[in-house]
Image (tube, rainbow, N blue to C red):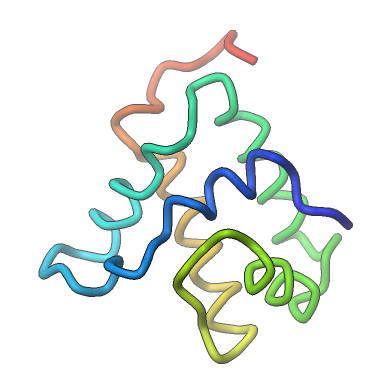
Length: 104
């Protein structure tokens, strides 16, 4: 499976300075997700839901992250998968992406 355009845009928000802040990981993810446009949120959620449901195996998902524009990496596929699960969770809770029903 090829990464979606929305996945690649999202990954570009995760740069070198991600782990340098004293903020929580959740806060840092929320800040990184601001690269996503409102119109792309639903598509990104669907892609991550599919990817994390097993449509893409963990090795392929890990490799997809390594090949993405992200500048932060995890040494294990489990680390990558857990991070993507947290990103998916934050998409539902992100203050910028509330009340987007009807937007596509």
